[in-house]
Image (tube, rainbow, N blue to C red; front, top):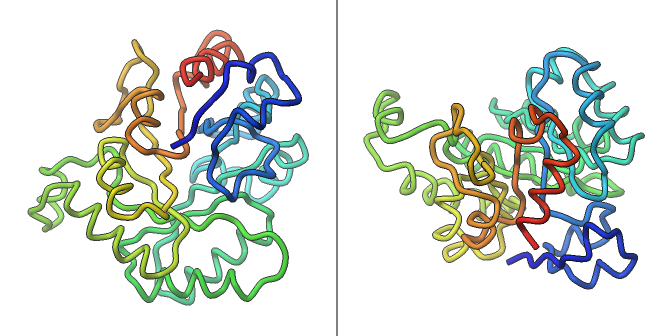
Length: 258
């Protein structure tokens, strides 16, 4: 479980020793588990927020809306500003098509990319294999289990009369078998996932600092609660992006983790 030292906000050159991050992040410029969601329709809006954030305090997430609007250029621009980029496109197609999409993402230099576990074992395995055939740095390959907006009645509506946590564990077993690096999951599933699959890194959206509105996320926890439950990375959107002072809001989240 990550441990965060209070010297982070002071910018100490020795702060690296205060962290127990997943092994693949040890050489990273970023020194926290925070990923800020750049959920904007335009390049200008996304960069306006990015310019207020410190790449040492967070990574950034580019999702479907922003990527569809800006294509690969937004990834390059953010990387040039020093950010590690989580490309959150949740690929889900036949195995070869999905694997080629993952390969294209890797060639952009993204830090993390995700696919839907519901695409099945063959699809996830194809994605793992295509990355292993590449030379150079590889992105973290993350599986999406059950979207954090979905509850049991939502799963029943698509023919799965099952509790979300049960479905998450079922898909997690497939992901581990395929050689995935980790999973996107609700913080409420993190503890069970860490117990069952300790090698998988857990990326948790739906994080809301204490006192924040829940918005359209249902299965949520605070940053501190999520880390204590076993999450490795925390995706935070509106509490930072819509704050009057995003840099101050980010610093407050980091302080909460100290």
